Image (cartoon, rainbow over all chains, first blue to last red; front, top):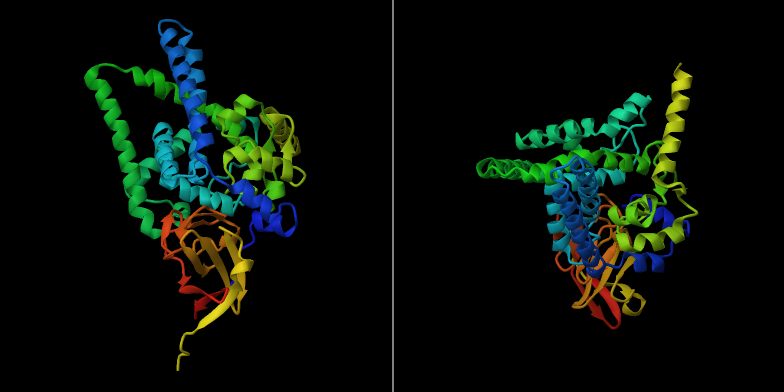
Length: 315
Length: 105
């Protein structure tokens, strides 16, 4: 008889960490929590956009653009939730909002979905997890990663490669053949969209979106790199979910921005649970996952310790 | 010569999880039995994308979602309705007779 593969969820159920009734309750979807949060999201974006406008003729435009950038890069968190179809009960809304987020941050939604599937299947396994961020060997490598320069180089290379109709060896493993044309089309549409935006700005002579969108995105991305590192970097590169993933307890504003994805261990245990139920799932699973009480900074302190120890060993 | 297909009972309707999906082992097969607003439907229990058990997934109306990658299928005809699921899943002709869910195998 064909057997189901062992997943963190099947393990949690088999080991009694989570009951079937609890699972059913946590998985329930609803449109309302996300619509309420999106309304606040729009207000927040309006506020940060206003800050840039008010600071237009002064040096204060730079911190204002940074704040806008921190919000913009968190569209990744929302897009990530949409990849899992857990933001809205209405399935097409997940697709629509995910696409909008992807266009905001240069991340084609379909490609991200397939890449992210293998991240969940092979979390933290070298050569198999396409999203694995290696533990930096030196503080120089750590700083380079946080600069987001390698990230942007990879993103642009990736999108242009797909637009040319090519996939890397790694991508061929996780994108089904029947979806290759769609992935190529998505990349061309996205580049076409950015090309159109730039062309319209050139024709009208109004370059405002560079200041409201492009520069903030570049200024904000290091913050997202800082946060993405806290999810798995420095945790053991093993298949065991209770070891390879880190939940970071952070304050309410950060939880709002990241759509509760700081509860990363819980998310990897049960990816079908929507963002609004993750804090409750945390209460059930917190004894079985790695929890960093010190938040994002606590996670980075642990990463610094490991880099420091490795550097001393190598010296 | 191939055996002629017949109706065979797999589980009592009373034992199904209401408005949800129930796992049943039937001979060599793991089955997922769905209690939907328009009746009972049956499919193989394993997702044809990643091999996870659909019976641990989220079920809503007529759509079952895989717990591992959230690919989804319409349980009435097995059609994939959400990526990363792309292939139709195996469904069985099903009916309820004398309080038992039966499938044609």
